[in-house]
Length: 420
Image (cartoon, rainbow, N blue to C red; front, side, top):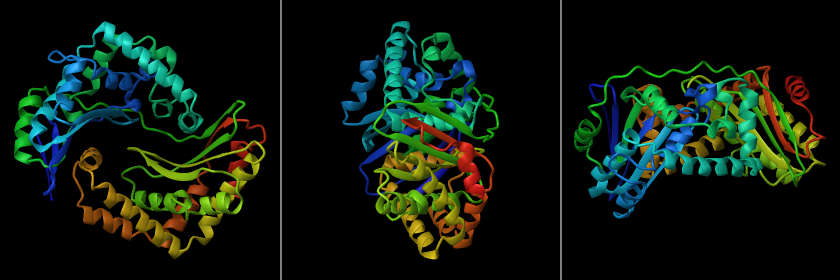
């Protein structure tokens, strides 16, 4: 396997990884423009734009976009996150030129037909409604809002109904003009690909784009806070967050190992203490999320109205305890889980292409896999314990609750318990 990274004169970066023995490949464009690049009056437009990319271009109708990829047995998809919008396809090796042509076409040449905008507006409003009816989905948007109040990073990706209801063609075109320049894009391909052939295709399809300024976003400030929505549900959905490490922070792998040993599997502390020993929930987990300049350590569980007080306090008590008595055995297990997850994920060309794009966006290079594994291996028990202490003493906590939450402690009470 070989990784190569090049750049067109206009600043667009091309990264590929050739994987011998594969008959398929994943190829796509990852654009460094997501929810946090929106102004408040644009909230939801990055996601709306992702939808509209599939609704027709100057060369292809919406049906033709789907048919050209599916006629060769491939698939095409996209997603929007808070920092990135991605458009990608998976096809057999002989169809890579077709896939890249289609992806480039939908990204660069959407027509934004008014009638199609109205159709897709209805689809997105249904998506927002579905999210509101899915407590263990919407709770994380509310947690984000509580952690970063009044900031782009705290707003939802889908956007509020009133904003989505008002977007027009000019709004979509302006967002593209401001954020879809070649310096904001990474073309990534993995699997049965030839780097020189991809470079030639990139020059043909994307080399004409004019050099653009890099889009910017405000620095995120994790201030913490609380959002509680009382509703008659079967469960209270509980989500707690503390500020964690950014992508580029020296302790980013420590943060991930900590989240794994706290709530990354059946052997984790929270799963064993809260579910297995006490029977207070069915689902409980921890995850370390990272952004360019900040991060969130998130803990989630769903429980009954009767047990929400005890569960909340147990989670905080486990966070306190981990700072004092985390063991070498736990750290070793978490390291093994993390390495296995990384390596297993790389068995998919799509996962490899996404990883390449993410690494280039963050560091403008692709660290060798051995370097990443070595950084994971280098995390010690003392590193994890020190990270846990810093996390607990940060003084800022975000809390989101949804359901019959009258018996739940508030964010200030939990913060005081954590710092005690």
